Length: 333
Image (cartoon, rainbow, N blue to C red):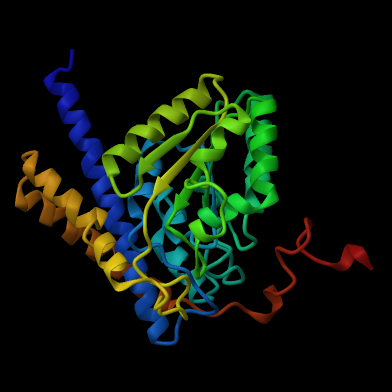
């Protein structure tokens, strides 16, 4: 039987998810703005519209759990607890960035928060996530690896290899397919033999077929808790397909004109942030409380942006550091 205390706790969790989605959206907004100013170095891939997936899992994970994500990984790295100033500084190629300015948008890592890397090679991180889960199981740490990947990765060999070994070894890992409908510029359905690229393949590995609304924060929080709990209790891996949509093109250079206008508008009408704001208001959250969350997120993000802009560029003598285990190349000579 649910008590008043349970209801308060549940609402606190929902408000935390709302705050996380706002943090993700504003981070991506300013990342794009600084690209327009010529400050972001290299390419970047925004996850605007996909925030409910990252927020639902980040809210459900323990601090010791591990996140592995794709090159569209700003928000996953941020929501695990990576400081936004150093995270944005990395996009700007600054010395205070989480990787010293040498990783950039596509290679974000912040181990103190369990953010174990963004991976530019499609599908490459699935076996790595499985390996980390195996290590956690061997050590008895109780950690769970959560591996996020796009729909295109389901047609990569590493996807099938990682799933197979995860089941064979009963690993504490959760695989989350962020199906945003397109693999770069190609509709996933035009190059895949099954309608649901992840969920329809789960049974081949003895897993349940799990298809969820990736734009519903409550649904994402619920499935995150269930799959994490299963893995932590020794129940083995899960494969989840979360249906979502990126509001922009594949990367910052892509206008996304290959997508039908009516499709884009239909998905934007299901934007998880305003939709969830309305749901929270209907549940009794006041306008003052919601606005307070929004204002505090905006203020914190503006501070982080100024911090990143003010940071220095890396020094030339740092170029050979963080390359070899001992920090330098001298031992090779």
